[in-house]
Image 1: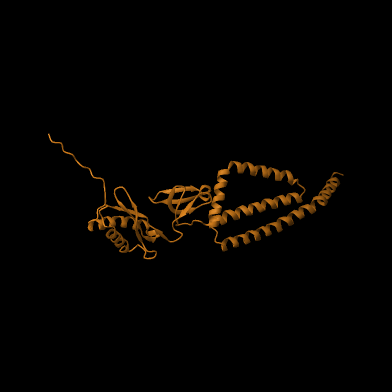
Image 2: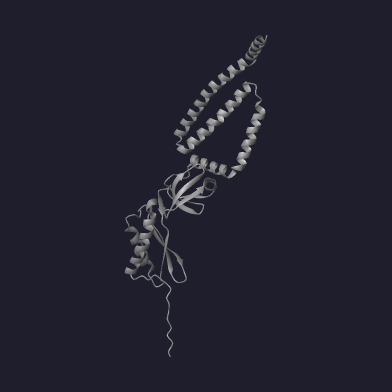
Length: 270
């Protein structure tokens, strides 16, 4: 009797759950196949749009596991497991994790935006969050810059994506803004010729756009000239320092005075 009862129970169990188990297996096989197709299609789209490799891997993993979780929930539902409470637990856990990692999620979202819209790329000279440097690496949560003094600068992507970014590399050329002052006794036309000669004789100063020299200010003790040469972005500092040095030498050679404070010694007669 006991054996017959066991067999009857097994038959009843098989008749009730057998179809559900088979259905669950079919759902798993078909679902896994569909997920692979979806991931493959998304990967092709990302590759065509030249998404960053690290972003591709992260997003593909995120989408893959999200779809797998949905597939598992569908299979549990097929087996008769109550999925409403299960989904509520997942939602509550997700909310708790999201609250705990609010700052990190903001940085992640910022990293995704930077990688999708690409306002900057590796090798660009940028100014952001009060820092200037060359973009060394764009990661999911942070962006690393190499500062002008070769220091490493790490900026959270949330702040970077929400703030102003000045990209000095995008256009390929930069204008070097310099100001030089000469004495009021100096001849303006001669001074402009000397300054322009310095600019046009420098090999790194571009001819197009043309450099300019103009009187910018009549200051208290000097006539100030705005000197504006153009150069390639990578030549900026070489041009900046060279023009500053060569201008001093050229003005001295032309006998044009550069005003500076003088100390006058008063000798008292004893």
